[in-house]
Length: 191
Image (cartoon, rainbow, N blue to C red; front, top):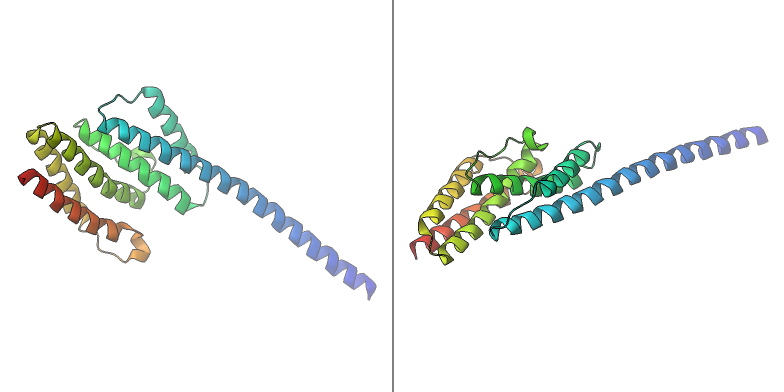
């Protein structure tokens, strides 16, 4: 009877040790994903600010952020954590391309899944509205109208995505926000 209890105890200990090791490894990966995500979000926010202030973004800044995006992409799991970083990164990359009058990147080209990309593109509309306000303040209505057309194009394309929030996350809410921002920008351009 005593041997059976010892075997059971040893088996439980073995199982718990394996679980502890597995969770410890996952926790280390999660910590790595969180750290990279925070850094990517912070760096993208700084670069978006530079775009609005018409400051140059150095190649080193871009390469450093790109490397972090590639690193976070390689981490298995933690899609929600990674999605936040990728959303911010796609917002920055799309804004940068639009302001520089270049083609916006494909999601694959910036290591981003389509949903995070679409959410970032939706957030880009708010940054474009901010750009319109800056342009109007600087009496550059023509360029502001060009930026407005970009906002409209994004909205018209994103508005066709009509799925449950369980599939799209915050995209449906962002569609409503874009529509409001578009109307506000139209009013500012007419004012």
